[in-house]
Length: 333
Image (cartoon, rainbow, N blue to C red):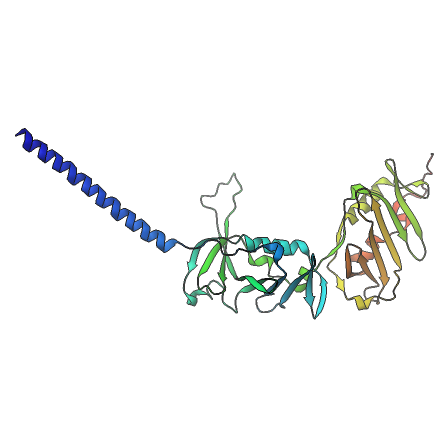
């Protein structure tokens, strides 16, 4: 009797273990099938940004094609067959968004759904990345969606989830990626141009030299004071002026042919510590609409309108600008 009980007991254990083994195998096979269905290469792009020599952007209908090319270490934008200085920070931002393009999931696998996600040839913003003569990325940027945060807490600021949809040339799949990608590329041509006039740390400045047809003078720092012709300039006026120049840019581009004459009418030179070379701004006579064509040594061959946005009056001021009171007090030293 004891032997029969042992046999039954062992048989029960064996059947239980066999049943568990079958369950595990079925579960593993099912999970493997799911994983195979879900598996895809999440890294959509892979290229060395330092080797990129051209970016061609085919925007949605309504905007002009944008061609950016690298010459030596400088980026240029081609507009109507002419080369202009491009905004390096904008190009860096675009390439950073492309090189880190990682899919979170496959949104669609059927070409019939391309229009739904705006990744078809006619609906997408297409970005063609070239290193020398080799295409290293060819991406179609489609629409984006916004998902409200789940269980929003009224006492905490929570961000929703932004998702963009993209397609890689030669791949039928539509991929979902985090963030809003297309906005960096969907711009007007002039938005890619270099708008810099002055970009310098005003705390390093110690001398500004003004030259004009009527007046020429130096604004220089002596100790804690700014001086002009031996007189102490008004500190608040100087501080406001320097702050207005330190990060000066403009989007009012004009053609170099609008410049009148080969010599500038006005010049501002900014010198200081930790500066490799002075920053110089020149104003050339221009037509009645622009009055002056203004260019900077930091952005050569890019000219801006002097009249639009009051650019000329902001840069080229007279001595009186720094002495708002009726009489300036001589320096007692």
